[in-house]
Amino acid sequence: MNKQNLNDFCGIGKRIDNPNKHNWESLSLDNLKFERPTVLCLSGDGTVTFEDANGYAKIAENYLQLLFKAKDPKTGEIVKPTDKVDILSVKYANNILSQEAKQQIVNCIFALLVDENGNRLELEQAKKNMSQLTFFTFCYGHSCLFNIIQKVNVRLQSAGYVENEISAINNACFELCYGHISGVNNIPSVRIHSKEDETFFTEAPLYNGTSWKYLDGILLRKNEPGNLNGLSGCVNATAPSIQIESSKLINLHLEELDEHGVEAIKLNKDFNLEPYIDAETGVAYSSPNAKCVAQMAAWALCKGVENSVQNFESDKYVPNTYYNDLMGDFKSIMDSFKQRELLKDYGKKQNQDLGIER
Image 1: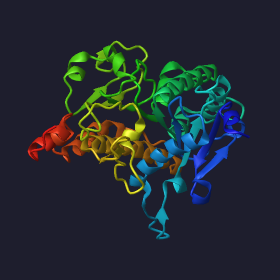
Image 2: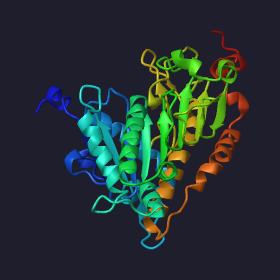
Image 3: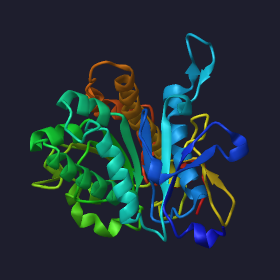
């Protein structure tokens, strides 16, 4: 089957510990089941090959090194993320997730929330099962997730769950999102935006403008349900969110760049920032702003997955109270950097300090 044909269908796979197979195993959407703690990766609309999907899933796996790269106290062996978690990633058909593929994912989520006869579960059990899922989305992937959760909620209502129960089930999982400014938020999320994102900066009117307009560095913004992007009265924001907003991620680079790509905040397997390589000069830029935001992203994903593992191993539902601590955690990460290191023109200021004219 050639590459063009591969692009004509949606697919899914997962990260595995097998370098000979590029650490990737393709799965069947038709037979998909969520059977243990799972990170479901929904990337941008350009993710049309398994290679693309695998690359995006690898970002999530490297983030999770922070949580799992340690020795098992019983065996003494190194625990890898894939030992504990299924890291799944979706590829699209001609740049979209088809309605059929969405419905298959909806069915898999819904199956966690009803018994074998399709009847509703006790609420605590449903929340425990939903907490098994953590979502990592980029750009178009966020829109896909919103639509999927909407469809799941309709099914939950048909199964006999009432509105406040559906909200509680939604709030038992978590989303880490990069590069999507939207007016919707139906599960707890951490959303990362760069002011240098040319794709979405044109939609800045969605924002409460003052802090965004004059942002220089990193801004943390917490939104309670009903609030989003610093605005109140958002009827489609039914869950809380935290926004991490950067004036410029690759802030050692002297020129303006389009920072829409999630590659700006990639970490390697040793939990170090993968530097941005200038295509023209070949110069590598390991910028502190990007490093700071990447560490926050990794921390958020780890906390979500940690709660999934806790619930998977527990007899009772373990609430995701970690969400209330994230703002403090993010501030601690920011405080580990000097304030000037996070400023948009840090690269220029460094040159000035060295007496370099540009």
